Length: 79
Image (cartoon, rainbow, N blue to C red; front, side, top):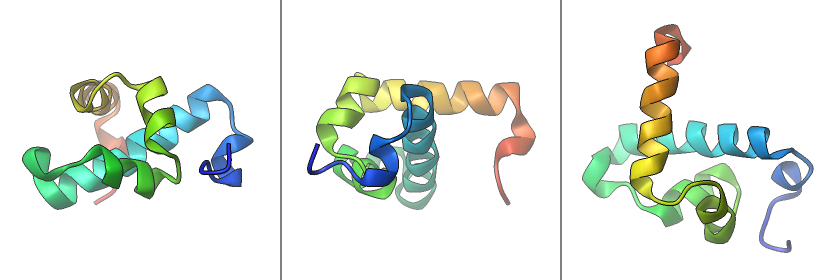
C-alpha cells in the first residue's frame, strides 16, 4: 500500500478505474498509442503498476475501456 497514493487508496474500485482511465486518456493523447507506457499511466493516475494491472490486464484493455466510454458519452472528453 505504500506506493499507492492516499487519494486513490480510499476510493473504491470504480473510482480507481476511472482515475486510471482519465490518466491513460491523457497519456495516449500526449504520446500516442505506441508511446503510451504502463509506467507513465500508473504515475499519472497516482497508483503503482500492480494496481493498474489488477484493474486492467493490458494497455489494450485500458484503451478498450476509454473507447467504450467515449462511444457512450462523446462529450465527456475535454477540449
